Length: 364
Ligand SMILES: Cc1ncc(C[n+]2csc(CCOP(=O)(O)OP(=O)(O)O)c2C)c(N)n1
Image 1: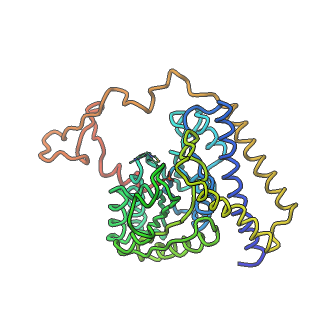
Image 2: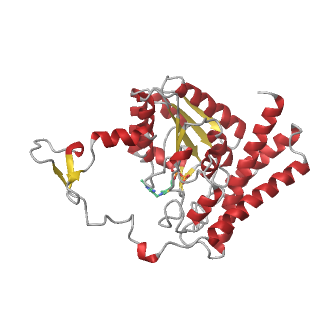
Image 3: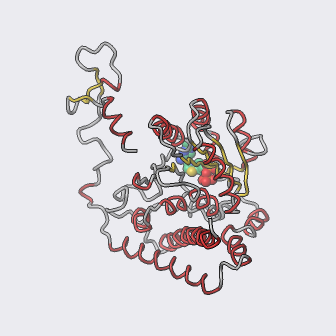
């Protein structure tokens, strides 16, 4: 990579970190103004982890993000307008106004929607990676979760399965010290969550999650390992969630001295200092980037506010099955009714055939 290309890349990373924070700052303002209903969950402090990790991927790779991964969505190309429509629960939002959080996916940009139940997305990430492997693609799945989610069974099952099957998955743990109000010392008795990797036979690394270049190096190594066919790898990013679990949470369980210490390690400020010391971020360049970020956020808000809310008449659409619950019965004559040969009693047609499964995975 030439000097000029490296400079462009670093400024692009800076732009995405600023955009991520600005989008979240704006959503908090909208919330305080009563223009957002429901909860607001932000990830101030995670920007180096989310942006840095996603920047290591290529086209064709996938992310399976968690609830604080706006930075990953934006890097992958999910539009700020779509995110703002989602937060403002507009009828044209990815979930059509049914959900106001980042429970969204965009398969055109390789974003698998997260499952709200913590940890449950990780086995899905293994499924996506298995398809990639079966199709002999040299693509990688980056699956993230918080420290709290590592205490779920699904986390352990996913790591074990990925390792046994040598799947191209990079497990990224965003260890921000708390699962809601539970500090890590009350969650696990090991020093670093990266140690979990050893038990499953995969490489694991723990890195300063507020240092975007360190994150990119560590996740880049893990991605290269997974891409080369050697199986999964795990990276723990040690970071801090500056605000509460949601805006309803004052996070008064965090000792003030700890918060203060982390605030001195703000990932954006640190990267700014680095870029300035490298002679890459003049005051003028910084103002330019700030103006670009502001314009993108303003446009997203204006677009979302001009978008109509969902039509109340459609409230039950995509929420309840149209004709009551789906009953699954065996195909006539089947001695061994299973999903693959079951019938949907509403339509009388096979519920899900093997060829439908094949067709769905082909689109990945
Ligand atoms: C299985 C499950 N338990 C509880 C919740 C409610 N919940 C949502 S986020 C959250 C905190 C998760 O902590 P962590 O995994 O460390 O991620 P963080 O929010 O700190 O980024 C909780 C308890 C949930 N969604 N799923």
